[in-house]
Length: 208
Image (cartoon, rainbow, N blue to C red):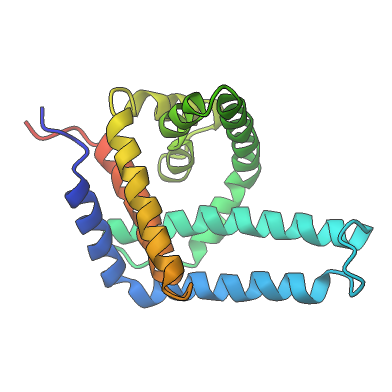
């Protein structure tokens, strides 16, 4: 069986996908960033007191919008990897998964936090093994528990390789930040595409 995680293949495939839909993927990210920022600037009380009823309401709304965008954007990236043009209708489609994603994300955060408290390394290990719950929910339409089981199964025996992929993503993010932060609008879609490619490599049977 061939090695499923090939770093150069993951980067090359993600980069190819980014180039094919560069303006759309970066445009979506830039547009959401502007809307998200304006919402905070104009909706948070002028006094700067975020812990008012209106401040809390805006914060909750922003969090829901962020989660919805993450779901839809990952769906768009999977469409890109499939050679399709990302569709705005994806955000409406994934909205049905929003509540499930929020619950799964909370569970994931609690698990990782507990792992990090246990001397960091368990937290990193659990992050690597459970990270694809998100991709499974979007790409395979799995439920909360099923998505975690799916991620745990496909990552078995690949922890070290996934750690290297994570380091590559961190490096790309760092490069994006030092490029006057403008580079993040290239780095972020590239990282999301790499995440999607890695998931697909783990879920697709290797060629004999």
